[in-house]
Length: 173
Image (cartoon, rainbow, N blue to C red):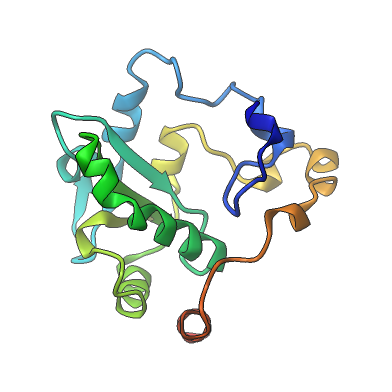
């Protein structure tokens, strides 16, 4: 079963995995919530995510916790490595959304040349794009549940030495 496989670095902790109250899976027009989100591109323009996505095929949209978090860098690299397979399967993306502003997005993009500029967007600090799909912050969860999450089973990010140096250079700004 899916509960038997090893978690990856950005998996939802199992303590929350069965909470479908905020899931868009099976929700009528759930994709519209994602596509209607307004995000900022690397040029500083506000756009509806729908305008950046493929229109006639399914799309992988990945919400990253934080551009300054190495787990998210590693996770995004893994998704980018299968982009050709997605295209061959008729699936668009991946399209990424993180928290930040135009400056932080461009700092991230300049440090990570593997990330296509037209696939990475930021939600400003109002978190509207995250709220549109029902995401919550950890501090909005039951504190006893959060305290008991064992993050050690999620492993370290899969970054090479140079990528760690880029990470440290980026987050130190």
